[in-house]
Image 1: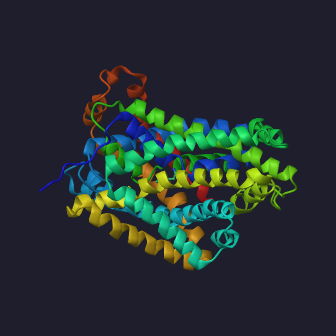
Image 2 (image 1 turned 90 degrees about the vertical axis):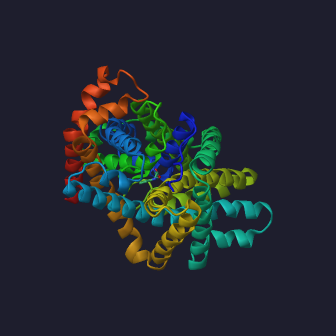
Image 3 (image 1 turned 180 degrees about the vertical axis):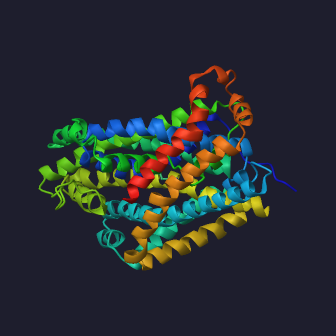
Length: 449
Ligand code: TRP
């Protein structure tokens, strides 16, 4: 018996879920520091262009493939064409997507666990349990495992509830909350001494950096990661869309939401660093760049909160709530990729598959936690530097070459009558077949040098 496939109940539901996937640690942590270190607003401009010129068309390829096939990445790609070698290519590519999503989830849940710990700490100190709070922010196997487990278990609980009751319900709750916390924090931080220096660093463009190949690479990788591309997450969300929604428009809205939140997060993080500096913290590394790694999130910002007096724990609480929420809505989109695939292939209930998949991924995270030095960075590089761009490229090729142009048009017309007369339709099909793959390839080859 085939069960009815879940779907998003409304356009807003999809937007919140897809924006929830896109807006994650990449936006609030990655984007601001990359921008500040790579010419400020010059980076923001390059990023904007790349997001719309390279990432948006690739996002459209994923969403369209998903809604056309109404299934997970493996079944979708494997079923596009009756030609045997194309079917095989589809299954293998789909399988790689599954792998990339799982690898990303493996390290992402560890980092998310740290955010959760940093959220618990100020809470504990507010109720006088300082020692306990300290344990949650002190590096250690037990603490890492416990936090990662709790975070993963919550993701699993949401995913087990299904598309509408789980993903959609939680994302529509959490995304407005995320936006509210972000704005609240910005208003507070911008009033602190030193904040305007941060604003200047962030917003005054240094165009001398714009020809730097590293800037281009950084911006491209960031755009791919930020829009959750090349792992089948947007594909599976697209497959839960109703046929009466316009795909190109939804794609633009998701891209806009994601880039705006990344930009707005910069208005918080960079000024916050300069406020910390005004309080005496070191915010530059030995290479002269602004600190960007874990030291920024887990040392500079906490030292800033400590210096804020009575408001400190509350600001810390709000900031790490923001980080935890951002990570949560992203992680559930990654978990949905293997869960949907295995549920659809085996025909077993989601409530059974979800805990099994979650445990397997937690196993991977455990492996990473015990082999931090050898495996953690390696996993990140393999999944995000190689996996995502190559899969993104493959998905463009599948949408452009394997899915027939007529079918593509037919799918796009659903929810957007008259699309064949739009600028989008005049450009995108050629674009996704040739230009986008070439652009991704060019940037990828650059990154290997
Ligand atoms: N976009 C998220 C961020 O910016 C991360 C993310 C969520 C992701 N789902 C993904 C990355 C799927 C790659 C693939 O943090």
